[in-house]
Image 1 (cartoon, helix red, strand yellow):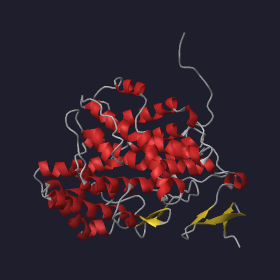
Image 2: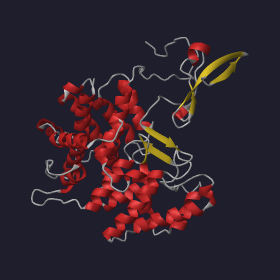
Image 3: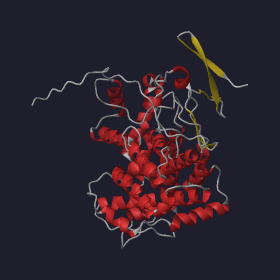
Image 4: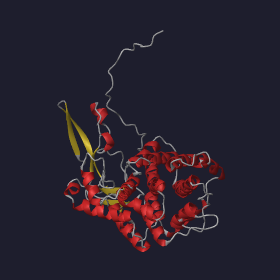
Length: 428
């Protein structure tokens, strides 16, 4: 028997079905609400609105749970492999050895961008924000790969996914090199995904950058932890743009634009700036926390709290362990990490933050990990985009394959002028 709820409006009762997910979560299906009642729902920020049914990622914010295709996030920590997780998200299952090898070879073959695209980088000022360049160049890929304007089967999906996942790191590295006035470094077919990206970022024509195992593990894990997060702002943007049957390149370029904002992908930059502000201002962590609690001070404790998680962000827990391992192996005493440790200790024992469920989130540790492996601050959000790309592809494909998919078209409650007579204020 299907669960229902009854909505009473002006004395008349309407029955609405209840949809139940595989983990027991329930939602009221209001898809026919306007048709039946003449009313719409109003939910600014969509905090209580489910825009779709999805089989990709499950989050329980009350319990601090995050699973990719049913697999708890923590199980990827020991031997992090971003490409394996990318395949899992996009195709719904872990790759077999044959699938993994085929996909890896495809990534290697498609790592280069068309030579004529390299000239496009010259059209951007060196001071251009890397995310602006990244969005523009991903969109430009649709001009060079018209065969993927439509994706109708799994072979095509594998082909376009490989090109996007491979080329995004090349575009990212080229935009960084261009901003520093350095020569572009071609992908090395002998290197795996993460070492190849670091090679293109930091090698010189006369000196090759060698990615050590600690850096490889840290960046693989960081990309995995950012790979998908349900219907966040950028993923919802990709779905909305894709709902018009826009191609995957254009849809993901829109996702980059949404991710760029400081309240989304740019949040870890704000965390690092906060830590630097504390360090340079010679404040103690206790002094800063005291200021953050004072609403008149203008100081904010960045990297704490989350829209979804009312407990620990599971990604932050994994990254905290990675940060400790990374700095221990590197034998580095970073004052910013010490400040971060102390801020976390204070906040977790302070009733002000505990009562408000302000626990460390993924942004709290991701910035200092990126800093430790040499990624410049203006590339932090670009790294986030590289990690999030498989999730965007998975959601675009899931929607594209759905027989019930419709173009996204939210409604609104109009609050402007009532009907008004036109009387021109201009004089002859």
